[in-house]
Image (cartoon, rainbow, N blue to C red; front, side, top):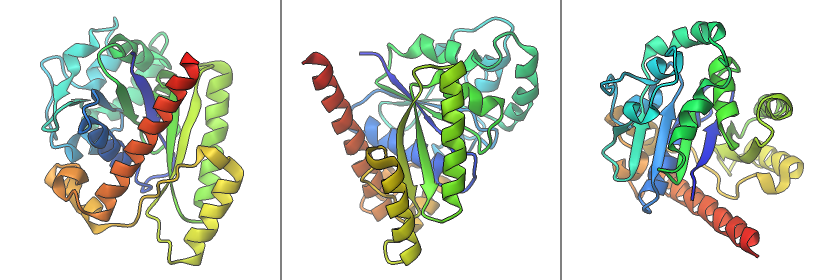
Length: 266
């Protein structure tokens, strides 16, 4: 089995994108899936939130891998995390320069794809945490991915951002990555007690139907606290509502994948 490569993307910040990448990856690793997380956000919040802030392999970080004159061995950039089964290609803030450097490189839009494809035989899932923008780094993430997972706030203006990202996904699919599909839309920071959250949930489900995950991620203090301790929420407080929601999301993805596999074999 080769890895499924999933980009976690939304051009708006503060939607729970990195929180989703960390906790979904960790939840899958803890049920004995082999998982790699790739941080291509210059804020490097995935790297710090997983407890490896400022760390790099002897080869460097994802920045050095992306801008190398010749495509390097991507395995040399992988670090092990404290979560059994979860590995990381880290980022640092110097990754900001990649937006400019990639413009000068041949195949600058598909450099990450060339790197990630080297490792699909070693993992079950590869998650790419993209920047909160639609620049060259995010484009690299979408070109490298099989699917894009879109976290969105349960707020009205988030619907506009969702439409813009879906439009980008369709353009990438038409020109650069014909297989790019939507993994799913994930409602985050959800408060089912408010009329607004309920209304946004209804509108998103009416428009995207089965592409919206049944799991919703609630507003949760423990989810917000965990990154400052360098831990996924599932290790920081497994019983918290936030951690349990990501465990539920992991189960939903696993169930969907096993169903797809059965359909393929029939």
